[in-house]
Every structure is written in structure tokens, then in C-alpha cells.
Length: 272
Image: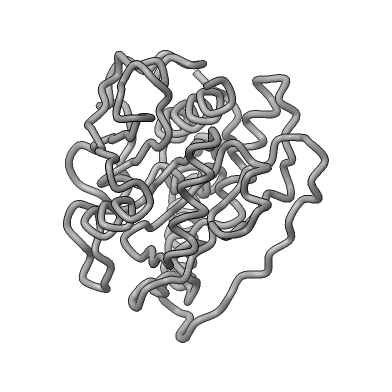
């Protein structure tokens, strides 16, 4: 089990219990205010790591569809930035010799030639993903050259605040790879044993999603014996546990499982 998440000490008295409860309530209230208390749209401040050959977590920037600014007024692509990738890279630095950039990741658009410098990339909130023809062509080239993409935090059924969930993502991917077909994945596949052995998807934690997550993948030439080019976390938000792992809002065991999945994705993307 990973042991990199700090937990609050066990209270020694009823007074301490009440105090702890008050702190947790205040923290939850602050998070709620942060999520829904910022009207309008705002772009996050981005500071990209200078390219030096070391691994950097690359987050894909895209034009957000209407409705995708519900979280802190941020565009959908930026939800969780930069805390989620920063925490995951801290874990990667502790358990491997990867020596990644930790404080500064990379934010890059699909049609930016710089994307091809980063073998593993990440897209969040794909229900709000909009795509131009130029971006589709560039994304196709990235995947065919060996790029591996982690897609996270979108639903089978869209939320009330907008976004089209899986249907929108799948429609965009048909423009990128017209012959590509996604398939449901199972825990026996190499990606789920690339560093940690994940024997069941039942261990994947759920925060605000209900039910069991579905993990789907798209293989090179639609051939499962070849390289997995995209893994999509559907009906779950794995990176949410990376983002808030040090806040004491969820059990340490849940955050550990989310980190294990993230570590496996990165290792697979670098070795296939």
C-alpha cells in the first residue's frame, strides 16, 4: 500500500472530536465555496516546465463547450490543475527512478507541435471537449507516433450543467481516428499490472459518482495484441483523489488506490 498521504491524528477526547469535526466541516464548506462561488469565466495561470528531456505530466488544453465553467469558473480542461498532477508526480518521484518535473507540469493544445515531446498526456472533462479539424489531424498524428492519453472525469449520462459525456468524446474521436473503436477493459490486461497489480475495478474509489466505473480503451489498429493508445475512465473521477489526497476529505486507502491506477497508466505509457 502506498503511504504518502498524511492523515489527521486520532482525537483523544470528545472535545478534540468536536474540534476536528468543526475543522472538517469548515474545510468541506471552503471546498464547496471554491467550486461554486466564482461566477464568470477565468483562465488559470499556467507555468510550463522548460523541456529538458525529463518526464513532465502533459495536460491537454481545449476550447471548453458551454456549461464547462461550473467549477470555480475555470474551463473544463483545467479542473484539478495543477494540484492533481503535482501530487501524482510526487508519488512517481518517491516510488520510481523517473525523476519527473513535480512543481511544473505542461499544459499544451492538441495542435501544438510541442505535444509530441510528451509521450503521456491527460485530458479531463471530455464531455465539454470541442475539436477543430486541425486539432483532430494533430491529435491523430500524436497517437500514431506513439502518444498515450489518459482521459478522466466524464459520464455516461451528462450532468445537468451541460456537457455531452461519452457521446461527445466518442464523436470527437471518430473525427480523430474514424476507424477506431473503444472496447471495455478488464483487470487482466497488462496496463493494470505495469507497476501495481490491480485485480478488480471494484477497488477504484468513487467520490461523487455512483455505481461502478467503466474503463475503456482504444488499441492501435483496433488490435488488443498491439499498443493501447487511450485509456478512458468513465463514470468516475480518479484525479479528484490525487487533487485532494492531502486534505483529509477521503480515506487514505481510497487515495492510495487512485494513485496506483495513475502510476500504472504512466508506466504503461512510457513502456509501450
